[in-house]
Length: 160
Image 1: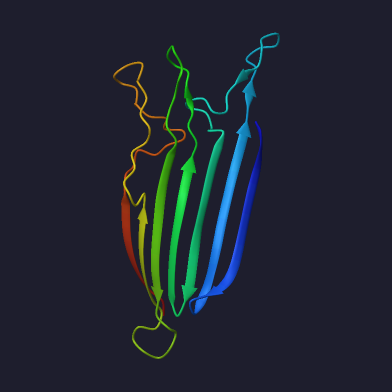
Image 2: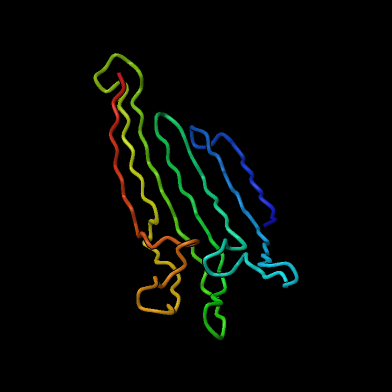
């Protein structure tokens, strides 16, 4: 495997707080040679192998005890070479959102309290489907895509 990873971030004052723009992306190229004398086979971008492209970008705003964040996750399509003719799956893009409040550290009963709401796969995206070879084989690429739909979590933390 060989590839390129890029990441960038930018921070600025915004709306009484601080906003950060974040992004990362990876491009992969990979081959495999099963035995010497045989040709190298492309692996990156094939079903059940790493996708050639994936990226994540988002924004985080923090101010007055609040944190609000949103991220977009993207995994590029892969080629299903388990059947003839080969077929390309769709890409998989999801959105995550987070909201957190931290009470100020003062003498009140709320001091040290933190409330957080997190939603992964906000729009409940399903992974791109494959035509399975048999009924007992899953019909999506579990290496690259998650079949878990929307996940909502709420946490309450109190520190003394």
